[in-house]
Structure formats: structure tokens, C-alpha cells
Image 1 (cartoon, rainbow, N blue to C red):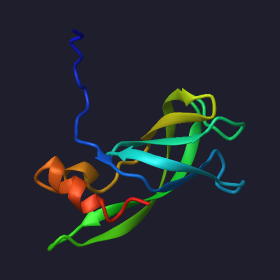
Image 2 (cartoon, helix red, strand yellow; image 1 turned 120 degrees about the vertical axis):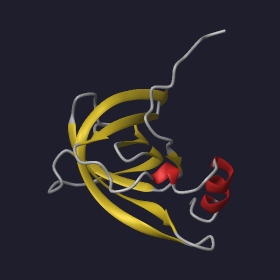
Image 3 (cartoon, helix red, strand yellow; image 1 turned 30 degrees about the vertical axis):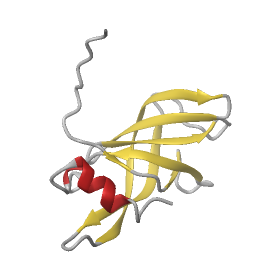
Length: 129
């Protein structure tokens, strides 16, 4: 049995929503699929092609995150963040998962908007596309 230590400083918000990224935002943007997000970074999947980011690369991302309010309602709040790619892992020959650390953190902790993980999962059922 492995003894792994989770070094994460905050809970991640796991959801599936489009994310757009590019090295230069004046170029053509590439679409990925958000896997999870925290105030300091995000992970997303993308195709294993020439547009896939690589470790150490500086990229700019544009994405939306659900911001929960009272009575099980939420709004999607949009962000643009620059950062550097920390890690890229192969999922299969066609897809990779990239992790980016933001240069500027988000103004809230996306995964800590509800009291429990199960509450978050229930609220996200309506968000997932």
C-alpha cells in the first residue's frame, strides 16, 4: 500500500466545461475541457496535437467557473488567466491532461463554496455539459 501525501492547499472544484488556451491570445485559440480548478490553477484535457501545451510553456487561458449563491442557484463567472504549464500527462494516444499554475490567483476558492463535497456534486449536475 502506497503512502501518498496530498500537498494541495485547497479542495479542487471538479467539473467539465470548455476552456480556451493559447501561447499568444492574438493567435488562434485551442479548446480543451476543464477537469478541475482551484484559486491557483487548473487542469484540463486537450488533443495530443501541435496545439497541446508542454511543461514550462507560458499560456493564457479563458474559462468560466460556477459561482454558487443562495438556494442552489449559481452564475458562471468568466476569467482570463496567464500562467505556466506545470505538467502534461498522456491519457491515451489522442488526449493529454495539462496542469497550469496561474500567475494571478482567482478571487475565490472554487472548490470550497459549499460545506461538503456531495453538496458540490449535486449543484454541479446542472452545470456539466
